[in-house]
Each structure stands twice: as C-alpha cells, then as structure tokens.
Image 1 (tube, rainbow, N blue to C red):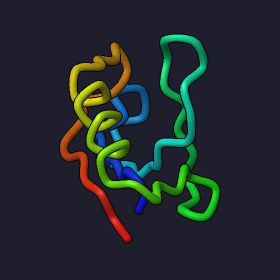
Image 2: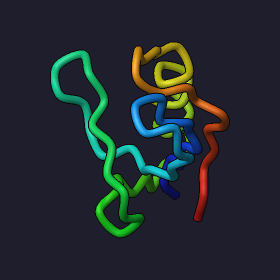
Image 3: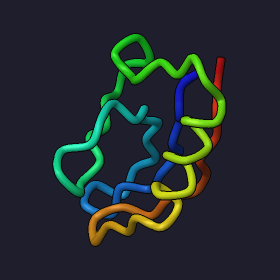
Length: 70
C-alpha cells in the first residue's frame, strides 16, 4: 500500500498526483512516481501517517484527496 495525494498546485495552477515517501524532520517528502513512494506492509502504520498528513497544510498546494492505493 502507498499513500496517494491528488492536489492542486497553486504555483502552476495544475493538478498533480504525488506519493508520500518519508518524513524529513517535521515535513513530508513527496515523489511523483508510485514505485519510489513508501510501501506500507502494515495498514495501522499507514493510517497513522494518513492522520498526520491530513493535518499538514501547504501555502503552494491545495489537497483534493488522500487515499491508500495498492
């Protein structure tokens, strides 16, 4: 399972699909390719990261959806 984001990039006014990779301190790191996104083996750990990521805000992007994908 991977965490997938659909977001509106306010700087270029485009829609993007990105995948969560890791935490860099208190900031999430996202990648554009599904294969390099973090792979979760335990759904409980994925749900914990989803709760935290749902709170994170960005001045340059608007989150449209966050979901777990196989």
